[in-house]
Length: 394
View 1: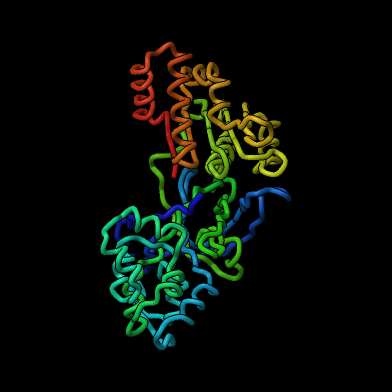
View 2 (view 1 turned 180 degrees about the vertical axis):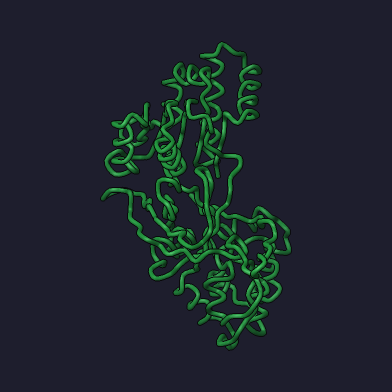
C-alpha cells in the first residue's frame, strides 16, 4: 500500500499576540519517536510497524478518526548517489521550497521529492538531456507511454541513465517538486494515551528496474528515523468521526493497516463507558504471523468492549477469504445492527477492498432488507448522508 500524500494546505497560520506561530502543517512539530516495533510475526511476508510519537509541548490535539501528517526524509545514500552523478559543484546552498536556504544535500534529504516522476517532470528533464530515446518519448505526447515509463522509476534513474545538463544546484532543484507530507490514520485515543499519538504503518518495499525501492515515509520510519524528530501535524478528518451516541452500535471493517482507527475507536469507547455494541471485522493473510494487536483485541473481548470479532485470514485455507466474505456470511446480523441504528465504518485500500466492501453492503441490504437494487442504492446513500456509513479509504 503506498504512502498517503497530503497535498492541500491548511488555513493560513496567524501569529499570536506574542508572535508565536502555532504548530501545524506550515510549522510542523518536531516529534520525538518514543518507540516502534514490528507487529508481524517471524516468517510474515509483511512488515507492519506500530510507532508511538510524543506530542508533549506541541499544543496539538486530535480525536479518534483523525490522521497525522508526517514530513519524511529521503534516504541519504540515494541523495549521495545523485550528488555524485551531477555535472556541477554540489557543495552549494540552494533555495528551499518553503523559503530559506540549505546545502544541496540537506535540501534533497528534507525538502524536495526525489521519488515521484510524472510526464510533466519528464518534459522538464528532457529539455536538459541529450537522450534521443527520452526526446522521442516526450515528443510523442503519449501520456500512457510516459506514465508506464515513470512507474517504478525515480529521479536517481534519470540522473544515472538519462543524464541532463544543469548549470548549478539552483537550476537542478528548480525542476523538482516539494517533498509532501504523508498522512496516516491515527491508531490511538488521546484520552487513553495523553501526550502521545500512535501510528500503524505498512512498510512498503519493492524491486524495480534493477533497484530495491520503498515508500519514502514508511521506510523512513523503519530504517532511517533513529535520532530524528520528524515534523508532524494533525489533519482533522471531519468525514470519519466516531459517533457521539455512546449507546449506538458500530460496525468496523478494517483489513491490514485499516485496523488503525478502530484500535483508537475501541480505546475511546472503553474510556467513555459506551454501552453500544462494537463489532470489528479484520483481515490479513495469516493468523499466525499477521494478527495485528491480537493481545489487545483479545483483552477487549474479555472485558466486553469488543462484542463481536470476525476474522478473515485470506491465505490460511485453499480458498481466499476476505472481509467482504465475512460480511456476507453474517449479512443478516449486519442488517439487524443497521436497523438498530448502527454506524458502518470502513478503512483501508480503496482500489479493491473499499469497492468490494461497498458492493457487499449493497447486496446485504438487498438480500436481508428485502430491497430492490435501486432501493438498496438509495438506502446506502441515505446512510452516507446521515453519517452512518463512513469511509476512510486511500
